[in-house]
Image (cartoon, rainbow, N blue to C red; front, side):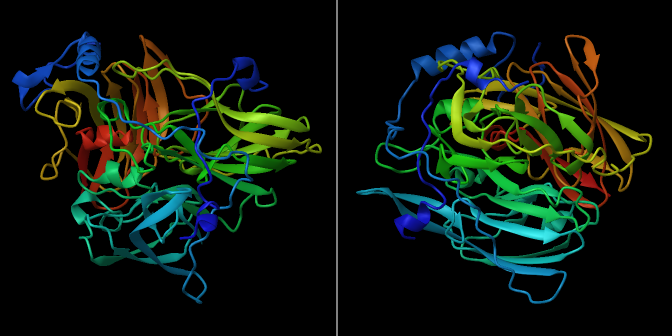
Length: 514
């Protein structure tokens, strides 16, 4: 790929620039004794585990030399996401090819970086289909590792969803085929989900967007933009850095935060605009602030809300979460899209969280605009007929070479050969998720979307701020959330923390739907 073509997608890198919160604001427990399971003699548990980790990481600290964040220009116009070409000429059929391959790209003179890509693009090509479409995608794996493609959030059969049990060997290919259900219009994405390889493959560049549209979209007349956030961590030689111990412990965060592959781009917002947002970072939490605008949340992981929700604080998006916004500029001028500092309880000797700039916004004041008061009718789930409870915990394990930490669900580390939970197809279930640890984790489940019923923290139970269909939700330390969901396909499904390093180190379980 020529450098000028690459710069359409990756133009630069982000410094950890701190800014004042005056700019940033919108207008607007105990650890389970069972958790070590295996290798219990090598585990450290209890409320002082983070102190143990701080001491251990300080004593074993090794540093990688990273590329200076001043290496690339900033302020280029936000790139558009390239579409994946539909090879079918038949109405209602989307047929295409994704080729996973290594590509060397010149980021700056005299340095080339090896990325792992879908069709040579970082991020991968955007897939757009309509509800009811039949999808057939041939995936060719020209990597040196096995892989899968997980269609994150899509309501499709288990054997087409890219489970780690269904890997495509290196040098091989497979065809994914599924039909997009009616009523599932929304903002989705795709990425690898191989066993023990997902972290490396994602941080080498493998991720792309997937949009399902409705032919009766109440917001179809509003101009639309896509903001796809990802991390990039490069060594001083311009190569993608390996995970450090801190990356494995806390989730990888690169020195560069990109939007559509571009560093601190200039984003032009001419009047009322609909924004689709993806947090495709491995471990970074984004706490988004959009000043100078009225900001309405209109959609979440599972598509549109029932009605718009006016945000009066930054929007927190954890890894893998998506959102749809309608922003209405109240002023004309230059402003900054920012991520406001959020303390998620990281372990070890790390710098404090800071606010940082993501992009420059060029706003043009909107004429008066009235959003529809009703966006859609959310599905109504009946009373639960079954209940499931899962608990997140953490432990030190000196036999784990990737940072000496393991992350567990119900005291167990993920095992490909073990079924952890069983459900009956179409049963409405209530799930209780407990984060019995000292840092934020999120929860993601395959094959369905859930509704959050309540949050409980320090003995105080609160309802969600708004009702939405979601597939990923954050849990603060010692928080309990209650969800309601229904699986409508049989087969094996995964559920896990979507901080990818934590998933890889064991925080994943397997649900068999019969």
